[in-house]
Structures are given as C-alpha cells and as structure tokens.
Image (cartoon, rainbow, N blue to C red; front, side, top):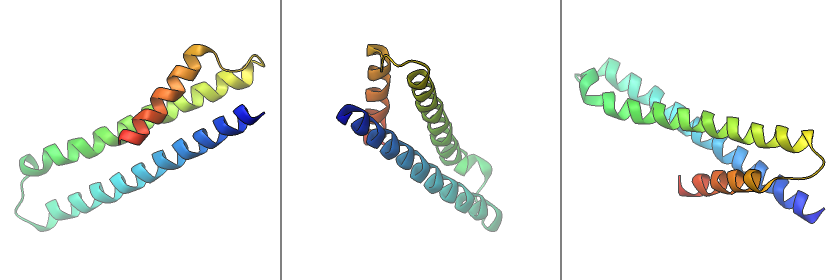
Length: 99
C-alpha cells in the first residue's frame, strides 16, 4: 500500500508540473504574439522562440498521454506495474525534473 501511495504522489506531482509548464508556456506564447503585433519584429525574428514554446507544449501533451497510458494499464490489471511501466514512469518523472 505504501508503494501505491508513493506512486500516487509521483503521478500528482508530475501532473501538477505538466500543468504549470503548460500555463507558463501559454503565457509566454501569448506575450510573444502581443510583442509581434505591437513592434517591428518580424515573424522570422521571433519564429524560433515561438517554435520552442510550441515544442514545449507538444512535449507536455506527450507526457500527459504517457501518464494516462500508465494509469490505464495499471487500472486494467491487478498485477501492479510491469517493469516497463515502472521504467516509463521513472523516465517521465526524470524528464519533468530536468525541465
């Protein structure tokens, strides 16, 4: 049971981190779009920055899909997490910590 609680806390932390990252990137992207509209910057000048923001949102979506997949696998089986599932979850957590 302690293992399950630990897993639940990691899932909650990961989900919160993903949401915070998405909120930050959405804010930055909106701010960047306002900057484009109100200045002489061309799309070419800020395009790389916008692409990085969008890439971050895409990575966030991929993390949510991985997390949902792990949760779904876990609820379908009473056998617990497979070694592969544990590795995917560990990779997801490690990825969040390095962001």
